[in-house]
Image (cartoon, rainbow, N blue to C red):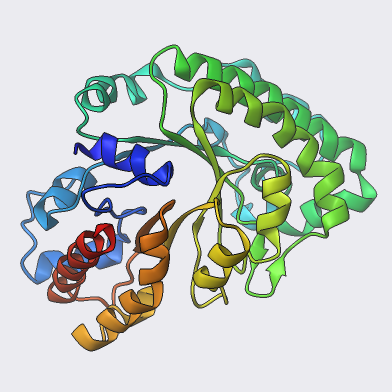
Length: 331
């Protein structure tokens, strides 16, 4: 099977020759700095080049947002957002929404790779919780659900229109195999907002864009750190079909999630904190997630980016065992 065929089959709960052997999220710069010192060839600088060196299957993951082009006010840290008032919002954010959604050259080189079956395409966009937090800042965002509800709805209406346009323009060039909404809506005790807030401020906008993706054959998923146990059924209600990275330290139990949500797609879930503890610890972690690997609809990977505590030899051992278990799960 090709990489593309294998991904589509796993996500369709169909038989495969083996599970995809991928890294969902590329490595921290500090991790790569250590690996270069330990023998990773320094001429390998691109994530795909490094992935091939490790023997990983290839996929293209690309973030489509122009938010990073908005100039942050001098001296304002990220947690305080991009704007303080609706007037600033008009001047700064509305200009972004009225411009191009993305640069075509971001994705055009990948089209033939996907058509040849070499890669699957993973697009990421800002979600309806994440974007408002980036615009308003952490504290102002959470308070705005109660103090400025109309502004919250306006931000998400604008984002919805922009995202729907982005999807149309993207699919005119290529059809990604999945599209992930960046949210980080949970922390280690569960969702950061109530179900009532989700239903009022988040759900209506997902219900407008998810069918557009489904009609194109694009798998809609959400990226959220933290404990997502309570969040998953909320997402299912609005048509979201999968989630990553399922951090173990935050309390996620992937076996229980599979028991409760039999057709929900999942990515990640391998506890990154055991990767430097030797073969026994790595095998034990694979044994924990192995029943879900056998169930379909799941691609195992590190439950976020590999930390610098993991040596080059540790990671090569991890990749070797990942391939072994991905082959065994398909049997």
